[in-house]
Length: 258
Image (cartoon, rainbow, N blue to C red; front, side, top):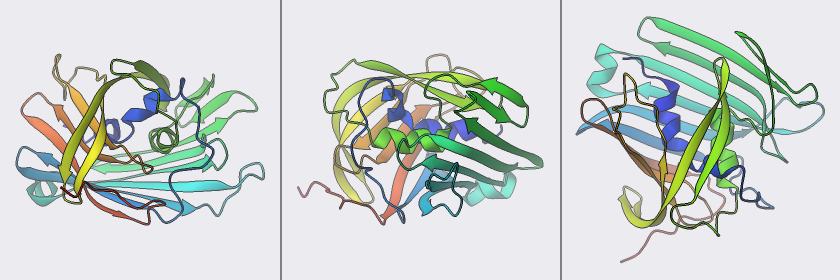
């Protein structure tokens, strides 16, 4: 089973599905130097690790400054022995709109390798990737840019049951993801207990997910808006993502003391 990009980033960018409704906050909730670390568990076993960080881009796009988002994913423990994965995804996003200029991925999964370079040209309204050129209509993201854009949305007026859509480009087409706001819950993590917003993104049944599989994502209900936990049912068992470390945040974390 390929350790696809979808598994990690379905967990990480779920709230970006609100991209078509709420307004973008005046200030970003993240800053250069932020680093987030996660572990993915299959049952009781740690299967993989993910690391995300925000850097200053050395490249300007049409004279515009950009953030450089780097996301690394790799297998861990016994999974790394039997099926080694080393994946990197990078996105250069506009500092004003947080929409992507350029996205690249470099994936090594066992003996399988894949690279892609995606250019988002909003002047010509086209997306150019390794497999060809595609139309660019409205707000379309790659996975890393969707995640950081989502964190900067004003979601204060959400009601339980609200549903929204996100458009993102992956490999050779623009996809749509729906998500539902479930409510608030308190979640215990390695970093403490947090009051969280809970979401239910849609998933597509296939080799990894069952027809009736449910994916749930918990986001801190504070100024940072970072995912701290996610859980999804797979064909056999379940996968859980948990935050293990958060550094360089723009705002302090606010765990519940009691």
